[in-house]
Each structure stands twice: as structure tokens, then as C-alpha cells.
Length: 139
Image 1 (cartoon, rainbow, N blue to C red):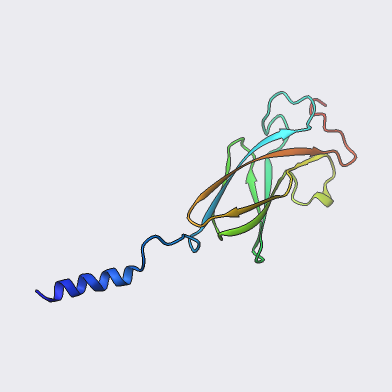
Image 2 (image 1 turned 135 degrees about the vertical axis):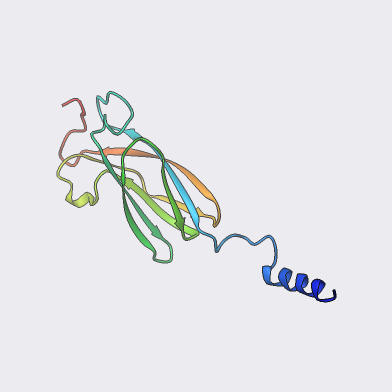
């Protein structure tokens, strides 16, 4: 019977200290977006902005980089399993802005610190960039 208390003590020691900061756990970011600067939109949604795909560009302060393509369906965009720490995030309607052939939308670059083990919610505005073409969506 003396073995049971020793085994329990061994399990507690292996579990490590309680109250870890969570920095080693993955972080999640959720992006909610609205449209700005697009003229004559019937509604504040993807269809009225003539957009079916969004691109999320993510860059970590320590070099991690990711460009994700997601469906534009007016729902928040959830990106799980990110490294915790400082990130720069941009949301846009074209993959590469320097190759855009018409007006497009892009958010400001957002600097955010993502704590491990938590979900961070961001509201961003996708602002129309004319790029030589009108932002009028009634055409």
C-alpha cells in the first residue's frame, strides 16, 4: 500500500506546475469585417462588394508567414493554431495588390499580440482602393 502514495506523487510531479502562462499553446484569431468606401452597395456584404474570395496575410514578428485564401461569406474568419506572440495581419480582396486589374479592398495592417491558448477577436474595415477604377458597385 505504500506504493500508491508514491505513484500519486510521481503523477503530480510529471504533470508539471499548475497555472502555466499558455504561451506555448496555439493562439486563435477571429476576423470580423465590414466594407468601406465602396459606392452604391445594396448591402454591407460580400455579394454587394462583388467579392467571393478574401485573402488573409499573416506575418509573425519572428518570421512565420502565411497567406490564406478563404471564402467571402459574410461570416467571421477564424484562424486557429497560430503561434502566440506579435503578428501583423491584413485582410484583402486580391491575392497581390500590385497585380490588381480593377479596384480592390484591403484593411489596414493590424499589429496584434496573440496570447497562447486564447481567441482574439478583431474588427477590420475592408476599404476600397480604386487603383485607376471606380469603387461604384452599381455599374
